[in-house]
Length: 62
Image (cartoon, rainbow, N blue to C red; front, side, top):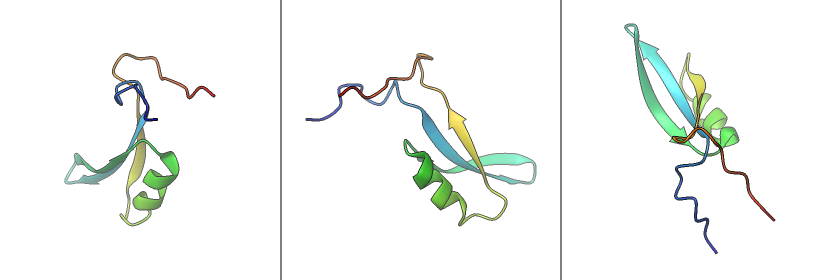
């Protein structure tokens, strides 16, 4: 069964590259390890944590 959170309550991770003083998001994921892995492919990139839209992250329940 799928998650009913619709993605609005999850923390997102963005891979950001800065060129000419401007930031550009080159990848976005809900998985930190995936974002870190992709970030290794971009020289000088950083990983940015983006809070959920409503400010309260939803945690998985068993």
